[in-house]
Structure formats: C-alpha cells, structure tokens
Picture 1 (tube, helix red, strand yellow):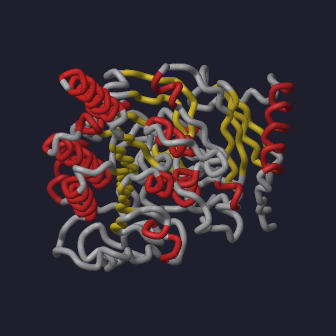
Picture 2: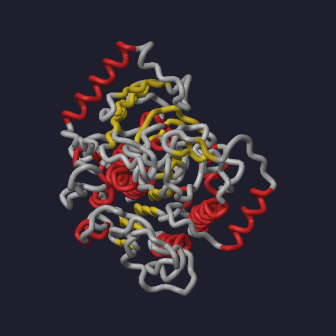
Length: 469
C-alpha cells in the first residue's frame, strides 16, 4: 500500500509539474493609430513623454526594423488581422473588403481555447457581420466601420463645431459619461475585462483610435505641452516642399497631449496585470498601424500632427516615415530586458508569431504572407525576410503620396512610381533617410529587384489605378 501511495504521489507531482510547464500565457496586443517611429521618448523624441511605453520597451525586445504592409489604416489592419498582404484582396484599389471567410488572429486564439477581447478601432467592413464579434472575438467594445471618432470626448458621435471631416459614428459607445475621453474609456473597458477574466487565459486587443485626427486632448495636458514647446529651440524651417509638404518639427501640443494619454493607458493595463498577479504570465506587444501624419499635399493647409525625421515622409508614403513603426515585445521569462533586434519584420508576421510564442499550431493557409518571428525572439536567429508594398490609390492632394509599389531585400529598398516611370533604390543601412537614389549606379540590382517586385504583383493579382489625364 505504501508503495502504491508513493507511486501515486510521484505521478501527481509529475502531472502538476507538466501542467505548470504547459500553462498558457495571456497575450495583449496594444495598437496605436497614426503613431510614428520617433513619436516616443524611448525612440528619441524630445517633446513627447511616454514613460510607460519606454518601460515596456526596455523590459523586452525592441525591433528596430519593423514595418507595416501598407502606410494607411484599413490595409494595415487587414494584414494585422489576417497575416496577408492587402494587395491580395485589392485593398485599397478595388472593391475588396475583408471577407468574413478570412481567418483572423482572434479566431485562431478563440479556437485554441482563449477568451478573446477587442476594443477600439476595427475599420474593416461596413456591415456588422464583418466586425470583431463575428470575426473571432468574444467581446467587442467600439469596434466597427469607423476610422476615427467624430469627437474624442463623450458624446463621441457628435462633431465639434466647424469639423468638416467625414468621420462616421462609433457603434457600441453610445452610452457614457459627459466629457469622458475615449482613450480613457477604452482603457477602462480593457481593465475591466482583465479583472473579470484574470482566472482565464485571454487574448486581448486594444486598438486605440488615438492618435488619429481629429486632434483633441485634455486641456490641462495641452497647456503643459504648450509651455514645454515655448522652451524648445528649433533649427530650420517648420515645413519644406518635399513629398508634398513635409513637417520638420515635433511641436503640436495637442498631439503631444494625445500621446501622453495613450501612454497612460498602457500604464493602467500594466498596473492592473500586476495587481491581479498575472503580469508575469502575460505577453504584451506594442505597435502602430503606420507612420505619423507628417505630410500633406503641396497646396493643402491641413494641420499636420508630427514630424517623422530623420525618416523620410509619413502616413500614406512607402518611404520609411510611413512604413516603419515601433514594435516591442515583452515576454517574461524568455526575453531579457533591454534586448534589441535588427530583424526585418512586417505586421503580417504578428499573426503567426503570436500563435508560435503561445504554442498554438500555425495556420499557413490562413496567414499566407506572415512568418513567425519566434526564432528571432527566442533564439536571436535571423529570419530571411523580403517585404512588399503596393499603394495603387495615392493621395497627392491629401498626404502628398503617389501611386507606387516597393520591395525590400536585405538592406536595399526599391520603389517603383509606375505612373511616372520613375524608380528609386536606397541602401537603408547606409542611407536610412532615403536621400541617395542608387538606381543609376546599381543598374543590375535595380533590374533584379524590379523584376522581383513585378513578379510578386502578378502573383497576388495586384490592381493598378492609372492617373487620369
């Protein structure tokens, strides 16, 4: 009998140890809208204050070559959710939208037994059948067709006087308290979810509407940054005529205040995870959907939010300022603090990467264009990566960008402005600001990369929109 008890106890210990070892991690994906690579103090901004984001970045791995598949909201978010290049569905450029038949990252986590949550900007599909609650998320807070709130202050669906934008209303946030700030509201909803599901394993996505226009922030924060800007010295002109018109300074107090509120949001989530005792069992990923709004058409007078310098251009452009984004991964027990990676990656990779780090089988037939970055994260092994961009609906009057396609292989990036028969080639290692076009001196390389780009476009049946003359 004693022998049996010993064997039983030993088996019980083994089972408990295996259960502990296989305990699944929670995953939080924190996405900011229109946030540039240099819009954080951790990446070098002298104006914006982001202590919570800085701490998260320093606690994990900072990717220094992370990109989005397209420098605009809808196509970038499509890639984040599906792991596919938007050109496959002619987004933008055709009538394509994200089909309900697409397998999203939310559906993959739900299928694996996670409780799934989405809050904030979805912007994928005009019909409710295409929204988070019908695309793999158990709970959806404010995710709908809207690309931005008519107002950042409740009631969110009422525009401020003089606002001529066409921002549609947000479904699901009709109730609220007068004057509450939408960044705080989405944060509180996410905090409540974490608290109520702390004993479950969850996958939570918080996609802030911030820091997208309309530029609106809390009055006391705006005044704080106005005072700070007065003490700053800026060299050179505020704007230059390049890529439309380019803003050369980070000096917008309202935008700075919006960034601070967004940073406080991340701080609240981390605080809640620690209070509930699950911070060390939660993977947190921080990123943006594309670069900051730094450019406008040459004759446009719209207010610009930020400067992406030293990167070239911004939102809407496939230059580095529009396509390169901050990307930080906190994975307790695996990633050491202050780890840096020069691995090239794009947001189609987020889907398979988060499945892989969570021990969930990959779905290569779904995330067709995504590659898992687990080797780069866990073992610091380089993953060979070629990136493609296709932007067939340029907005020269709005953000100063024009129709083009691009490819990055190794350190080289080629851009084909096909309507103008103009090709540009840059070595991003020696020229990250994209100022020295090598197409004349590197003719063979240019020819090879252009052929590679055109073959890819043919393969995905990318749509072309010709300029009307």
